[in-house]
Amino acid sequence: EHAIAWKLSQSSQVQQIFCTPGNGGTATQAKCQNIPISVTDFPALKQLIDDQNISLVVVGPEVPLALGITDYLQQPNLKIFGPTKAGAILEASKSWAKDFMSEANIPTAKSATFTKAETAKEYITEIPIVIKADGLAAGKGVTVATTIEMAHNAIDDIFQGDFDKKNQSVVIEEFLTGQEVSVLALTDGLTIRPLLPAQDHKQVGEGDTGPNTGGMGAYAPTPIITPELMASIQQQVLEPTLTNLQKRGIDYRGVIYAGLMISPTGEPKVLEFNCRFGDPETQPILSLLETPLEELLLACCEQRLAELPPIKWRPGVAVCVVLASGGYPGDYEKGKIISGIEKAEANGATIFHAGTKFQAENLITDGGRVLGVTAVGSNFTEAKTKAYAAVNSVQFEGMYYRRDIGSRVLMN
Ligand code: AMP
Ligand code: GLY
Image (cartoon, rainbow, N blue to C red; front, side, top):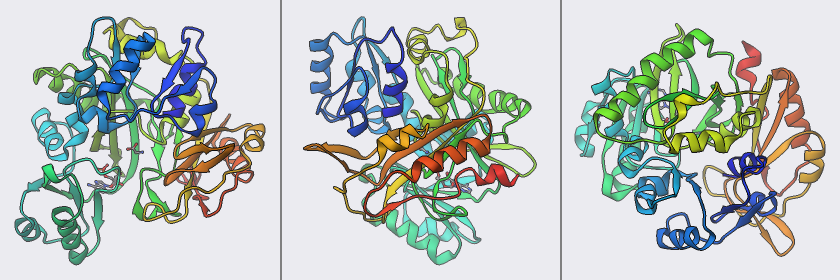
């Protein structure tokens, strides 16, 4: 959300930005004002829109989309970037997404859905295997099980744990190998256009080890996606997704984020869809975007995406390193004082905030992922070196980050 607000604030067409509830980054961002309203308090958001005469709403996270914020806020002369509840289910239910993909012949891992732990367990005969909670889980609902016991425990967690209780199903999926890529695309419901392809490091540990997180770092564009591969992703994944949404009568205006596994022989398969910008992928992607962001968002809302000239990108590469609270994605402490941001920015990086807030005069940690240190360079080595030089200036107690963001590219 900070990256979106940062990019919007650069445009002369954008007068003022209200961030609800915002964070320590949007608190000091030019043209931005934080308003302490929760993203799920729809009546209060509606009131704010009326009081402030707001013309464009950009919905950042998946939870309000899945709850139907776009449907709730509909009113004449208000543009809302983000799908309706009917479209957001693409992310909110993995079993729905699997049925959708199978109907549209979109390449994806083989899978089966179960509503009972016992039958789910009986299905598992080989490992590795992937166990997915059906509903939203903030990037923490998926286990890649390397033993049968681990798979069984993951299933028990889903049925007995604290996942979305209304949606107690589990998707069990074939384990795919290859490189993961995030292709975020903009759609107005009629046309779909990809942004620069990005790669995200999902796992908490260096060398891509340990449990999955929301993402520990990202870069764009990834050289793994050649123009030919992007053309086949457009043809095999993005176009059929849009066509099938249309067939189902879903008017989708927002981001379709395809999380893909690219096999060693270069075949893309969809791991998941998200109905919003990705974090941290959006930090490097928007760092390279030259077309004013609000032009793209408004074109999506007004169904004029096909009329826009090609999206303009700054040449080069952007790398984002996430600074997290020690312990994340497990338990971690909040409230640690953050220092060194100005120095880091003086080193040529942009620091996007996630879990931060101001308490009195101090900027403090307020979440698992705290900051996204992002730098642009003419090539990978330059962008990575700049990002890590800036990381070295930032400090807070328990700060954790991976030192190998971008290593997959440099190794290749
Ligand atoms: P998802 O939320 O479905 O994208 O899953 C979260 C993460 O789990 C993905 O980003 C992958 O790292 C991993 N994952 C999910 N599905 C598979 C699969 N079928 N094979 C291998 N890894 C997977
Ligand atoms: N980086 C993964 C996500 O935004 O879901």
